[in-house]
Image (cartoon, rainbow, N blue to C red):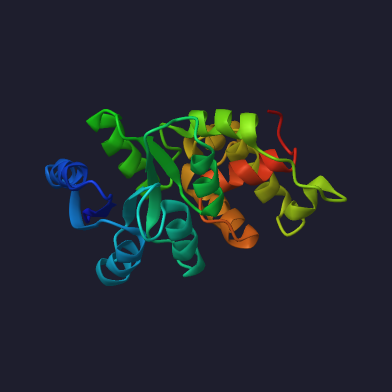
Length: 218
């Protein structure tokens, strides 16, 4: 198995250095570079092509939300962005998730939580903070005004719609597989199809789409 390529972007050199040391100490990860602002992060991603980007929300030159949006606009499925914040209940976190971030971490997170999040995001699994992201969405999410709430799902097959709604409820691929009596590999295929057809980057954007259209109960 190839190593997970991780990049760290934070304007605090000591924090960035600590994250780099943590990542490089793992057998299945390597840090491919660090940067101190969003503009430098875009250049780093273009050059080093990390799988996962740990990205501070509040930085000089270009903040984490705009950086995430610009990375999403480039297309492709890399890097998967994990935003770093000092405040859990932060509207900027929700904005970053809408922009394409796959998960978030608080800067006081335990090392094992950081490493689990990197691995889960890389593999497309629900991150440890997904429940907190759901709580944030319930508190601050805004319903999208549309004539028919489920029109966004018209491009999906019946099975894909079912998988979409189960992902939106926070179920893992393994849990979905057990629920609908499919193999986990088949579920992964359906999840990829859902993301592609709806133009979404990751699972958390499925959650946001469903909640902000009232397709799942808060």
